Image (cartoon, rainbow, N blue to C red; front, top):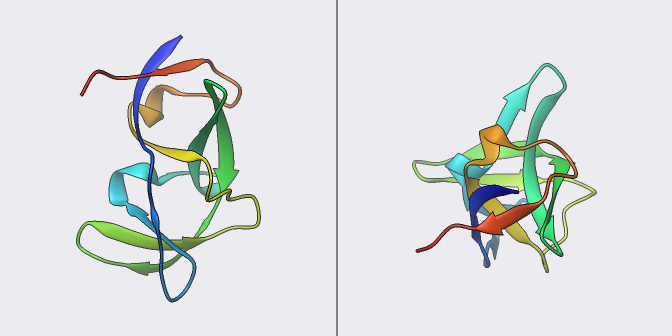
Length: 88
C-alpha cells in the first residue's frame, strides 16, 4: 500500500468545498483529488471554483464530505490503490 497524508476535515465554502491546494491534481482529463474510503483511494473529478493562497474552493458531483481528502503523496496514487495514513 502507498503511504499518504489525508485531511479528515474540510470545510464548506460559498461555492462548494474548501480543500488544501495540495489536494487537487490536474491531468489531461481535468482537475481531480483522491478521497479515502476503507483504506482505498478513490479518484474524484472536481471543478476549481476559486483559487486562494492555501485553499481552493471546489465542487464536484462525486465528492463525499464524510470522507478524508488526500493532501500529500496523492501524485503517486491511482484509483483503487490501498493507502495508509502517514505518521503525523
